[in-house]
Amino acid sequence: MKRKALLLISLSMVLVLASCASHKPSIQTFYVDDNVQQYFIMPSSLKGPGCTVLMDFTYRAASATATINYTISAAKGVNRDYTALRFILGNGSEVAMGDTVVLMLNKGEKRMRLSSKLPAESFLKLLASDEISFAFSVNGVEHVSRPSPAFKRQIQGARLELIENE
Image (cartoon, rainbow, N blue to C red; front, side, top):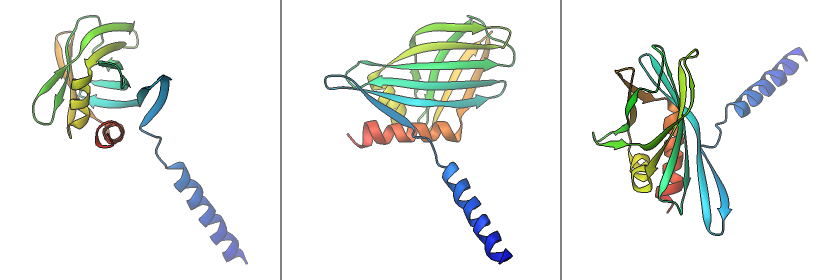
């Protein structure tokens, strides 16, 4: 009798843990206006030596641009002296971000929140790439951040939704 109870408890625990391990959806879709759909790619991180970048994407199918919001945390600190914000794709090409605005600068916590724009064509090129890194300079130091497994899943999910299912 004790063996059956132990077996049932063990099986229940396995089922509960398995259900908790499911992944969040990588992309959320919203209808904004008539025939306008907005896609939100959930935040995920890229990491490099001395820095972490938490990034999300918003794209409206009818728009000519995608918005990228991201928080840069750098061990050596941050300031408004950032340059060369860009993605490096697997084929060696680069996608530069434009219209960058600092949304928040917290020198005490050594992080800043920014928002940039990408032309729709560049955004779709980014999604189509199998390898993506994010590079920037802050305080005169070049940083290259590599995607976490979660970031890769987010991009793959967005690729399926926006490119391969079109």
